[in-house]
Length: 436
Image: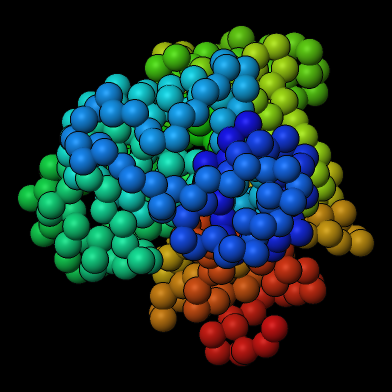
């Protein structure tokens, strides 16, 4: 096995343990990896290849069939790389991909987005993550150019939209762009294709963003383990007749499994079930980094972990994460339904919803909110009471200046869980009240 991307900030002990557990044989490193780390890898029998010292052929960038200087051979069932997930749900995973599955992931993107691989592409995600690697490999292999920014910046991104043909963003980034006074003017004159991934893009946000937008907005729904699963396209503010997740991507087949009778598939339109998918982009296995538990596809299907509803036309609507369901006083609540209501409330920029343990209720709905300066606790409570049943209204809520986010600008679920752990049943505006 070859590990082609290495997180230079990972503690050496964790790196060595992971290499052993995932049967890594070769590691490609560059100048960012300390020499001491390389020595430790060699000591446990891992071959270290320094790609920064290699002499690439003069025509390497322009020739599509140039040989990589270091010959890599892989069988269909042999993993060639692993990459970590973003960890926005609070659980970070590492995946192992075979060469065919890796190739399929970036090849399918060319079909779905009708992108010219020789074009210029803005990648607003770290290369260490699976989505970033897929997009960059596909573009660079076709002779294109990847534009990377040191961090996400609204004005830098808006400037880039005038010179790139495609851009990869997460939903939070798109939401931030829409808040800029420059958005409408730039959106009207760019034909850039915005690919929104790294989290579910809410249909209302997609429709709002596409109003007056001269290009196309793609809701690219998937997971680290399965790659892209479905895609919906939004153009010029048109409300989608298909489900908000769109249709299955090329090469992907899915089935919905009854949540209570796990052996029975859901077949009737309008019914919901746990999504399982079979795609050439499926990983070979997934490793929970914290617990070291390894999971694998079953009969070719990967358990996606999301609950979706199938419409009559075969498209999909998002219901929520199967493992995130909150049971509060015997009432089943999906965080996604609470999140949708919060994010369409006046003054709410972004939100994150999670179940918090409680002695009386079993669990309560907890939420953190990033709000504008005019957002008040009283106004938000009044608005939610008018729209939601009591059990769904968050009992624990904090308004913050900014929601904690990870390197991909996705909400940091683990950090938010820590923030809400001792909050109890109360609402606070930390912007004015302060506190931990």
